[in-house]
Amino acid sequence: MKIRVPKQLIESILINLQPFLEKKDASQITSHVYIEAKNDHCTIKATDSEIGLLITTDNLIIEHEGTITTNGKKLLDIIRILKDDEIILEELNENLHIKQHKSKFKLPIFNFQNFPTFPTLENKSQISLDSISLIKALRNISSSIDSNNPKFELNGALLNIKANSTELVGTDTRRLSVSTINNTSQDQLSIIIPKKAIMEIQKLFMDQINIYYDETNLIIQNSNYYFFSRLINGKFPDYERIIPKESKYTIELPKKEMIESIKMITTISQEIKISFLPHAIVFNSLAADNIEAKTELLFSTGLETPFDLNVNSRYFLDFISLVEDTHFKILLNEPTLPFVLKDKQFITVIMPIII
Image 1 (tube, rainbow, N blue to C red):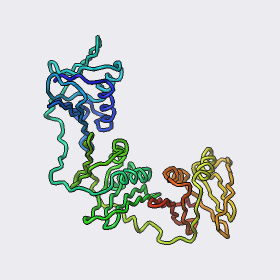
Image 2: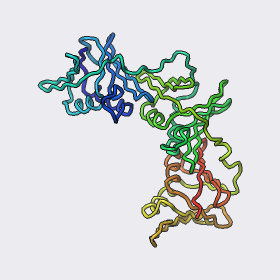
Image 3: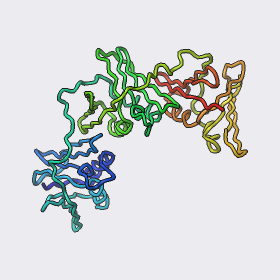
Image 4: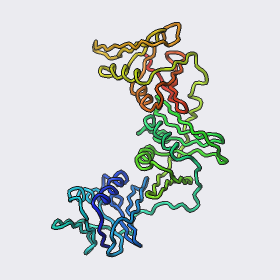
């Protein structure tokens, strides 16, 4: 194999592939990128066997067709230090040679036939969803998804397709986020997508995509990328039971002023007390060691009696940062019961701090 490729192109591809590489053991072929030059196209892919990405480009010159694998991190390190000019990648004597002007580097290669295969679209069902709405919904719930929960199903998001709507759900057991997409579907489906896959989907896809699945894998494809992820095998909690069916009080709050007030208190404490008074909202820190922070927002809440809420400010800010309008709603029942933050089709249910 011998190809000539612009630095900017190969560097961008390798950066996108880094999250898909095996990081801990460089002796594994999953720490390698797979490069195939054939029929005027170059295919470059990486996978740790749980998640994978394939990128295809024709913006290069292929002098000799061929296929190799080489360490993806080391190759990127080399590419980064070269000048912004054409780079030659050439297989010689079971090594990959990287050349530019008078600079030369050499990396070992493995037998490309041992590289893990990617799942194919054969016998996969297709999900009919507006992909832009899907990616937005994934962004909304990402911060609520747990990372290292011993219950594996909580380390991902539930994609729950119903007859008249689709819900994306994430929870870390202290909060629950649900983002709803209005759509009609003949097929009903519930799958759990790992958090790592969700984070990469948001980075990679900004346009219309095709989505496929079976019991084991999720595949997302557009003109540039072919992405797959293993699905989490488990039963997601009955999240609808957690969402309060009614509320005693509903207050429409200003986004900008709430962010400013909460951030002022978080310089002292992440745990805060919010007091909703008839004509003001008071924010206090819950820090120990006799350290205090307090600020007040003049605002008509519509309440007749004060309502105190102790809460982790990060949960509040994570939600508010995703609100698109100038206002959002808070739905309250009792100070010790879960409350709801709501913005159109996006809600977060938060468990208050009990003191």
